[in-house]
Image 1: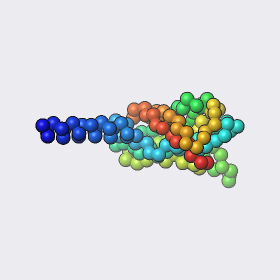
Image 2: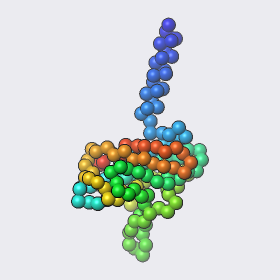
Image 3: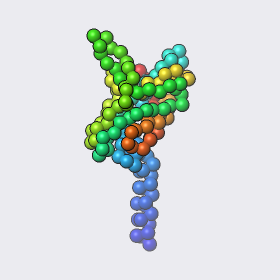
Image 4: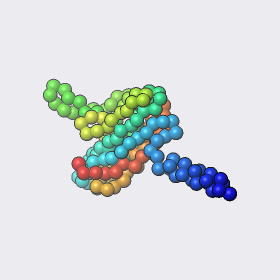
Length: 145
């Protein structure tokens, strides 16, 4: 009887652990997804995170959030001393065993024509599509800018 109870406890723990994980079944792990607070008057917003690679090279090819009219993958670049954003053509590379860091001043998910205010504490579901790995939906918490 004790063995059956132990087996049930281990099984329950495993199921609960998997439900709380931000890891896809293929090894991609999305850490700390968040977005910047932005008032209603601001048309755009941005999301950031760290994506840990699996054992094969991959690429983040698109993102989707229902609160965005358009969602694009962007990067910040400096040309002739001027900082500007541009679309990350072809997506964002995630090297095998490495990571892709989406952070202010670098790569990010751009939310264009957002449909409301991004208030601190809001949680926004963000669906990420990869070239190789399975699609994942993560909850991005809105934080201070």
